Image (cartoon, rainbow, N blue to C red; front, top):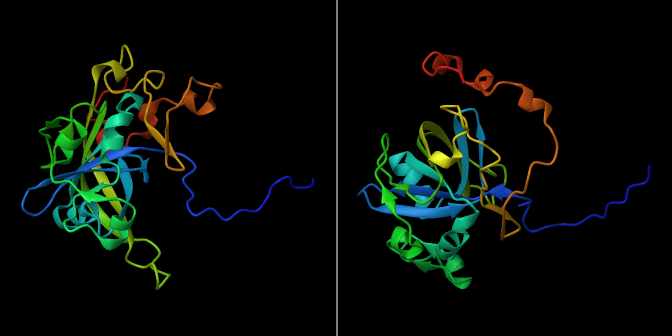
Length: 225
C-alpha cells in the first residue's frame, strides 16, 4: 500500500491533552495556580510535565505537594485568564518576550475560589469539578541526554491521596465511579481549547469492572460498586 502521508516537523506535538490547574505552595506557604496540558495518569499516580524553573516546578521540588484541579469546558475563560501569567518575579526574559507578566494572586486573577485540602497544604479550586490532592514522590529530568536542553523540563510523579468531585459527576447508584457521559473536560490541542463530544462506539474495555484496576493494597478499603 502506498502511503498517503506527508512529512512535517511540528514545533510542538500537542495533539490533544486535558487541561489541569496545578495548585502548589512555596516554602513560605504562598500559593500558586498554573494551567498545564502535560498530564497523564496510570493507576493512582499522575505524571506532570512542567518547566523546572517555573514557579510550579520550583514549588513541586521544594514542598512536594500539589492539587491537580481539572476544569470542565465551562471554565475555559477562567483558565485563559491565567495564560501568559507567572508566579515568578521577576519574569524571565524568555517569557517576557512573548507577553508573560507576574501575578501574585492567581486565584483572584482568574476569578476562582480557593478551598482547603484534606491531605496537602495547597488549596483546591472550588469551581473545578475534579480535585486530586497528592504528594510528589519522584522528579525525573526530561531530555537529560541532550546537553542543550537538559534541566529545562521535569516530570513530577504524584501519588494521589484524595479525590473530590462535584456530585453531578458521580455515576448514579455508585459511590466511587465517575460518569463519563456527564464529564466534559477542558482539552487543549495545539494551543487551542476544545472538549469531548458524545460517546462514539461501544468499548470492549468497558466490559471490565473498574474495581479490577484498583491497587490490591487499597481494594479491601472500598467496597466494589
